Structures are given as structure tokens and as C-alpha cells.
Length: 336
Image (cartoon, rainbow, N blue to C red):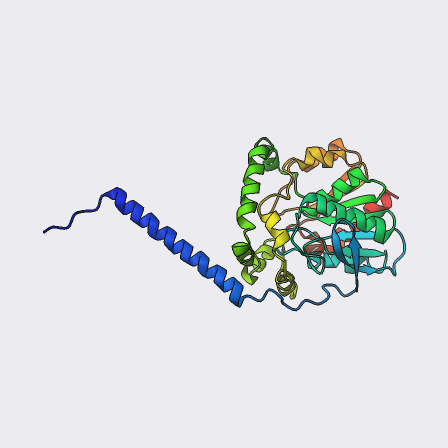
């Protein structure tokens, strides 16, 4: 008796079912591997060659920071970015270049480094509170602030709401000046719903750590930073980022970032356009953003200045430290 031939539709469903089953097996296998074989308590020492202290913020929890007070003049607060493998390692040249000339503070933002990494909402308001409380209660007065990447948004929010705390703001490779941001403004409501769904899915305890482990693997870290350096990577940056990303609770803040909940698609109009303190933007090429709208902001706002540090790919303080410090020194002299 001849075999009954399968219909194309049943073959399609069978193939899809096999594919889904294979993907589920792979995903389950990765979750098990993450839980059993990846060390999430890697030894982590001080991430900068400096004195490290802790401060208990009433709103942002325990904050770790590095400080060198031997220089003179107005204090400088340096803020690293917020992304899956962020940390003070990506702003270290700024600290070492300024420490002999100015009192310098480098803050481990909530969810990173030695700062508190417990479960909570790692939202823009939390990072603003951390910056505000730190300047007010640790530095004790107005500071010049240097912020990198997404953290520029949070620092600018503080400067808008509390200009008495930030004397000037240096933004290194900030987000929010690309034309693509403008096209996303109309989609904000839909994007918000998608972000909430994405976060809800990624934050499920069963697999949230395993999802983050993909982004925090050494190959992923190397790929992330290789796109942002003109030359070879600093010898210790991959291992430093890896260790920092393999701590208890290290996945909690990055999950907010990965879901898209931290970025304001209309930050230029809602935040940047309202800052009154002097602003310097250092930029060139950046694989994570672009700067088509920056020249318009600089033309419209007399308190804004932009300097292109070329060639660089988002981390000019590593690739072009001389030009970076010259631009900052010239800016600070002009706003005294």
C-alpha cells in the first residue's frame, strides 16, 4: 500500500515545530550552562588606582566612588556610561589626566562597579538622584561634570533642574543628536509599550541572567570596544569589564538598558534645549549614534560649544587624549 503523501502545509508546520523545539532546547541548555558553569562572583578589586570610598545615598542606595583631592580648583565629577559592560574603566584616562590638577571624583553609577546592584527600577530618575545626591552631599558644592554616552542625558537633567550643582558640563559622545532620533519621536507611545513588554520578558528571573551573560561574554565585550577604539584595545579593558559584569546582580541595570527603557527618544527637545549651564560636546564617529543635529543646537544655543576630536570612535580620551584635554581646558578657561 502506497504511503500517503504529506501536504505542503503539514510539512511546513512540521518544520516550524522542529525549529521551535530546537531553539527551545538550545535556550534551555544555555540557561542551565549559565547557572551551573559561569562564575557570577568573579573577584573584583579597585577599578582605578585611587582611594575608593562609599556613600549611602538616601535615594540611590550605596554608591562607590574614587577620589583624588590633591589638585586645586573646582572639583570635577566624571561619570561613565550606562550599557551592559559599562564602568569606570571606560573613563580612566580622564581621571588620571586630571588628578594632579583638580580635585577629581569618579562615581560608580547604581548597578555598576562596587555600587549597590540590588533589584529596583534602574530608571533615569534613579541616575539623576545618584548624581544630585552625590554632588550635594559628597562633593559639597558645584562641580564641573564630565559625562560619557547615555549618562549625558541624566547629567543634563540634573543641570536643568539644579543648575547650582553643575557649573559646566562636558558631554563625550552623547546620544540624542541623530536624525534617526527625530523619526522615532512619533513612535514614542508604541515604543513605550514595546519597551515594557521587552523588559517584562527579559527580566524573568529564570532566564534574565542567562540573557545578560550573552552580552557580558568576553567575545561580546571585545566586539563592543573594538568598534569604539581607533587602535588596539588597552590590555586590561576586557578582563576589567568582564569581572565587573560578573557580580551578583550585575544583570539588573543592563536589562533596563537592553529593553530600551533608559533612552529618551526626544532628549534633544525635552532636555538638551533647556540647559543653561555652559556645555561642551566632544564627538567624532560613534557606532552607537550620530550627530547630524548637533550643529543646529550649537548655532541656536550660545552656551553650547562642540569640538570634533578626530579621528576617534566615541572614546576620544583614549584615542586622542592630548586634543581631548586641550579642548576641555580651553572650555573651562572660557567659562570661569
